[in-house]
Amino acid sequence: MTDRLGTTPSQTVGPFLSIGLTWADGPYVVPEETGGAVRIGGRVLDGAGAPVPDALVETWQADPDGRFDHPDDPRGALRPAIAGFRGFGRSATDELGRWWVLTVKPGALPGPDGAGEAPHLDVSVLARGLMHRVVTRIYFPDETAANAADPVLCAVPEDRRHTLVASEADDGLRFDIRLQGDHETVFFTV
Amino acid sequence: MTFVLPRYADDTAGQPSLDHPDYRSTALRHPTQPLVVLPQRLTEVTGPLLGEERVGELDHDLTRQHAGDPLGQRIVVHGRVLDGDGRPVPATLVEIWQANAAGRYRHVVDETRAPIDPNFTGAGRVMTDAEGNYRFVTVKPGAYPWKNHPNAWRPAHIHLSLFGRAFTQRLVTQMYFPDDPLFGQDPIFNAVRDPAARQRMISRYDHDRTEPGWALAYAFDIVLRGRDATPLDDDDD
Image (cartoon, rainbow over all chains, first blue to last red; front, top):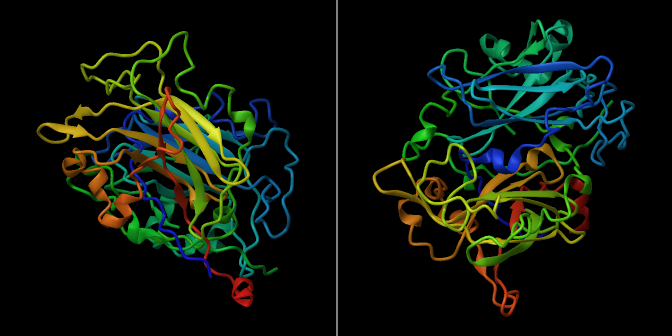
């Protein structure tokens, strides 16, 4: 057994994260011209309901076939069928706290215990005032049956599950992230 | 279908609390509802493996990104990215950003009275090599005042962002410099309660890597979450 090294502690990204962490192509999980692409976006809000203009939202997800181009996917790393699919999105919030990514809906996932998962995105939120990232998930509003059987959603108190499901909007899907207060988004420890 | 996934060890004991009143910006931004345990499943044990295409030729050298040399003490920051088991993390993206030598960020929100340096942006990125090594050339950032408490000053620091190999390993931290007299009054540094864990955020002056007539060197190893032992590993013991 190797001796364990202590993990380097997390520190806040502070107010100037955009200097180092914004990419021109950050929000594009898939290229702009991708067929069937969906825009997911919303606002990051603090405990007073005020927009958080200095946050960074990052997303990570499977491809539409429910696969990851990654060696730790036990089914084997698989190049996604969609050209330019990155799986990862990154969006700094603007002065109104708005963020967005352009992506495609991921496929459902098998589980190590046999229980499958509904399509979802894993989300990290980083900001001044957050000493480490907070983690949440985005589920899809047109997956009622799969969401009802999802083992992660089912472990969340029923009256708070709605905070993890995006809603239909004119320009795609809307997902607001409420860091604190009424309808606080469910955050996970991972 | 059943399968076995890697499992990343819990490291919360050495991590800061989201609710940290001494750092005022946490007040309205920390969740007050209990965090829900997210089991580590496929989405959590995988992550973006971003490649070299994200890194430009001069991204590792923050002193060569403009027409002239930036002002300040030129330094080399280098080290290894490891996981909690001591294994190197190869080919992972390291992003940094920092204030200039006067303690000023090149950002519209920075209202300190210190000057902008036209020859310094303060952003860099590199990939670790096959042994997990990384290296930047930059200038030592200045300390700077902020409004958190009376006469508040941030110790000199460089922000670092790392992906590792899995969503679970994502880390954003700050690297500090040895023996900074400002540590005692800094609520961000002290939000890490465990004194031993705080030491893991402080770089070490490295005379062996200091380059004669040119740049001081600081060594900073970064440790991402390691994996719990698997039954297979136990068989090896």
